[in-house]
Image (cartoon, rainbow, N blue to C red):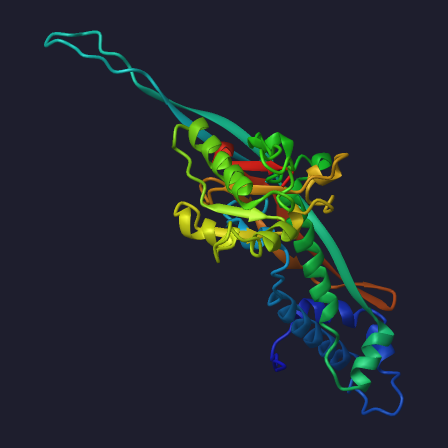
Length: 345
């Protein structure tokens, strides 16, 4: 259902009025004319108001970083960096006598880390002819251009959240600079295969147990990952591969017998051919990866100091351009030991 907008940006209307666009609109033949150039500019400003409102409502669930990782918008849009501290405890207590004066000291110290904030930009626009056609058909300007701009910015942030952007000092969950531990899938004792597509159910379950045990052992049971994300083809295979002669699939068996695991999701970004989001897919063997992590904002989050923003129009000859921007620091993970990347699933 279309919305009715009763307000518009007066600044944009004034900008359009000073351009050649209203005069162009006034040249429409066979139509009820605008009363003036002012009326033409107000009409177009209202159309843009409609388009912008529609774009803000767009949602794109196929970009899985937005669905899987917490989003943090706490930092100010003007920030160039985000500095965060990971605190640790030190000191040892001891048994003392009644008159002890040499009590041991306990202390806490923080190690700072810095993430860089960068702008992501794109634009869309309309020609004078597109405005004339919209007016002639008595339809709104096509909001799909704004939707496309919104999507392209979200898609770039999604890519960065997974693989980072080394050229601009932005890190993703799979970036080497995050220091997230890795687990290399080894050949199964029975099948001799490494891929979960070819391993039997017992070998896959053994890999999952080893992955969780590695996190637990390394962190002395402090970290307890609760989310497992798989490549799409692996998730499909596990939802169909049966455990022995039972009616259970590997996926249902895991969900029922691993109470620590709250969610099992799939993401195409982890596939062995998704080189833009999976750095391990670009390697010679083209490995798909599984991601085991704690879904907690304190452990990791995508930091977006500024959400999708559309600026006032810029008029260039007989075209109007709408610049769009967002700001991101990529994915920050203060506790890299709370996650594990399994290579070669």
